[in-house]
Image 1: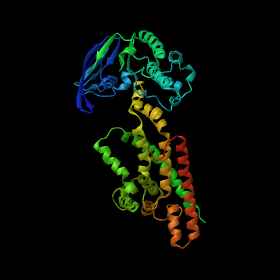
Image 2: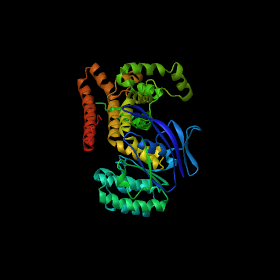
Image 3: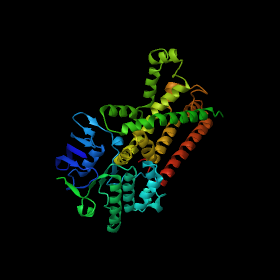
Image 4: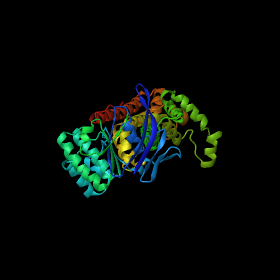
Length: 205
Length: 223
């Protein structure tokens, strides 16, 4: 069970805007987060991952307090170890596809399985600049999954994929999430692209 | 023709660059993260040699490390170290004088990397240090090379600071730039020309090499 109760101010062009989320997520569930641009969807994911501190609030995951601004508790991102798929992919330009995976994990069998799911087995020696947008996005997803995260945070993870590739990847990912018992929070501008993957939703205004 | 000043200059440049790489890169990393008032003041102090007349910096170093009083006397009596009119004094002055050339490009390159690169590494459980060595440093190679070469080349050309703190002791503190000045003073234009040509050639080759390397990496060394 993941309990999130946070409140913070967002900087917006028209001034300041508040982000307030109070919600419980069942372990193993897949939740789509949607809302207008600038509503704080990405900020919410970054707060949960520990990259950004909210003004006040708490995050409790499986009974462990990750964040409690009242008690000044803030677990570093390294200990939270949430899988994170960034909107800009955040791939490491100096590393090949295989090096991305081995930087995250050492289990070669697991890495091989992920690369097969992402259809990147034949691109292991390629650096990100030599991959297409869709391949880069798949690598970002696979890298996040390499650590077998209990909580996966995905920011617009399928935006660069064609419908066929997206549909195949989503069905493979659904099996993986069930196998790992991963709770997944997915931010999307197009909730319809997540059909068949998510059962719950969170609307941020 | 005495080539000792050339060897002394190269020795000084190598030691200064090595020391500044060890000190400057971690400092640049620390300065690139966040902005406190203390960091701004420290950065201003580090940048001062860029705008300060070298003789002013040399004068203050001469005063600070005067073996007759203060820190200079304490260093002399406690550790038997003398920075005035010695090679180690030249190294100290060069490290301070060339510091902005090492720290500036590295800090600026680190700040230009997207924050998501570090965040992605942290989310994989990697420490700050692992992130620095495996993700950040390898992705600023052109700027690292620029910083190393600029530091080396700048040390080769130092004059005012080294003259103030080191004087002109043959074999100890008489570096090439001082030898040029000294030769001209003695109307020995032949030696002055040889020293100058050697310094010009080394610096030119280094700077061209950096431009060629950075062109290959599609980045200007001035970025």
